Amino acid sequence: MDLDQLAALRTAEGAAALDAAARVTGGDPLAAASALRAAGVPAGLAAAALTQAELRRRATAKFGPAAAGMFLTRAGLEQATRSVVAARRAARLRAAGVRILADLGCGLGADALAAARAGIRVYGVEADPLTAAMAAANAEAAGLADLFTVECGDATGFDVNRVDAVFCDPARRASGTGRRIFDPNAYSPPWDFVTRLAERTPRTVVKVAPGIDHGLIPAGAEAEWVGVDGDLVEAALWCGELAEVPRRATLLSEKEGTPVDAPDRGRGAADQLTGAGDREANVGPVRRFLHDPDPAVVRAHLVAELADELDATLADPAIAYLYADTPTLGPYARCLEITDVLPFSLKRLRTLLRERGVGRVEILKRGSALTPEQLRRDLRLAGDAAASLVLTRIAGAPTVLVCRPVQD
Image 1 (cartoon, rainbow, N blue to C red):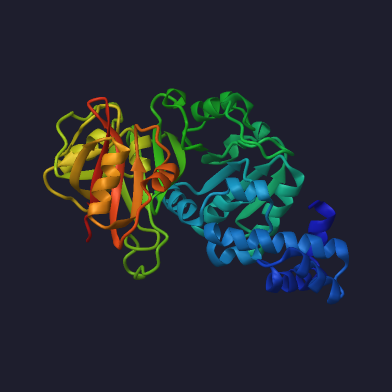
Image 2 (tube, one colour):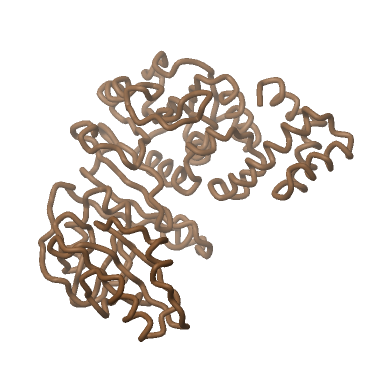
């Protein structure tokens, strides 16, 4: 994709090609290309349309129905924020009094569009000309061009005095190759600019990778880890006046069924666990129920706070499984009932499962070097029953817990 191809896709002929591509994408790519050529679509336009149609199909998981009208790149789609996360962030910015926002490194515009939908005026800056043009096209397609405008340029040169808050999502993939960048100083814009930005602007939000080193978090900032339906999807630093707590785990849902008068249940629902992030949970024996914390809780270092809520303890100080005498069903951890605690032995485990007719197992692990796929093959299971196996360490010893889920 280049600027000329994007311009071609935005013509009436391009729109027709996109419609035709949408009808044939998802199957055999050669057959799809042949179908468009048979319909009289020029080869170059057909290739661009089919690429966009495939990206839009994939983007539905992040953007929902809005993906059907967006212009996308592979790298931009991978780094783009899910709509449910962007909408929640926009709502928080709006509630904090933000009215004019700079989105430095706006990419395809996912966060800027969410902010604009919340009524915030957004000035986007994007270094890549094609991505900037796509972001502007996405704003127009969404009917938000009056609230979200894009300039192609260097984010480090933007005058932040023009706005009352800044959002920055540094590019963490190499231009051209799409490879992940793990050195923060190689981000675009670089990490030292991002940290200075937080010092210069009273209200700054920075989107970061979920695996960010806690040592990189600026003093006084709130670090938030966000999960969606059990998947850890991103982290964000809320700086200056926007910081409310040291650490936060926010759990969102994209599931259907939200009543319009109940925004905190179902789709877009949020549960938030907060704390200092510097406490250690108490250690005790294995008890009847195991609680497996959501990855966002673990990455936020809020396992101790969750242990308080569950009246639970760790069995190993380095492994984030919590054990309690009573089950607690809630958003922050999955609950399993432990039926057996075994020092790990493949032979002994295989015998126990065969005696119980277990033919299906899910395998969870923390603190174990075993590969679940290989263990499943080695067990050679047969039967109609199911079980959950937890591979872990207890007092330093490899252990397997045989469990069954606690249902609602």
